[in-house]
Image (tube, one colour):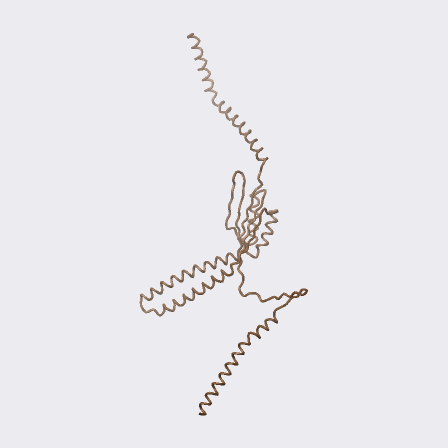
Length: 270
């Protein structure tokens, strides 16, 4: 009986100890939250209070893109300046395109600029251009997409580890081949997801700026110049005909002689 009482007593003590530990753990977050509240700095202005909370653990992933267009007096002189500016901010040209339609020249550069230098690059570019005809800046938040992709990559790598563990325990050739096939598939998926992550990291580390510019268009003056060129061209054509006729003087004289002989013969017959 005494032994039984001792066992019950020990069980009771263990139960009480377990309950006490549980209460300590349940109250721990409250104490930590109280300490955290002390670390929160509060700024007051008038009767309004604004609390500055601790930044989120996940860093936001932002894709920054811009498009600007402007007029220039000389594409030939402007292009080297923009290229030099891109090099200054440690960027590079990913695409370029030149157009010359009916005398209207335009040029487009697509540059990749480090995100940290994006705003400074746009400011200096505007100073070089004088002013922009159009300017569009866009920011896209891909944080959730990036986090989801990272989670998928982690899950696929865990599956790969499981397949490797199974492969070590495979006893027959058929089992080995089956697991190796699964490993090949999961590794292909891992490479695909890693490629998506690299693309997103590139998009967030380097911003894309499309720069389009064109030369001044001529209107009335262009029409007058075209008429002038037409008169000059016509006069030059007439001179070329005279020169060609001069080269053919022998044939002209020969033709005249033949014409005179024919006329004289007709008169004698009469």
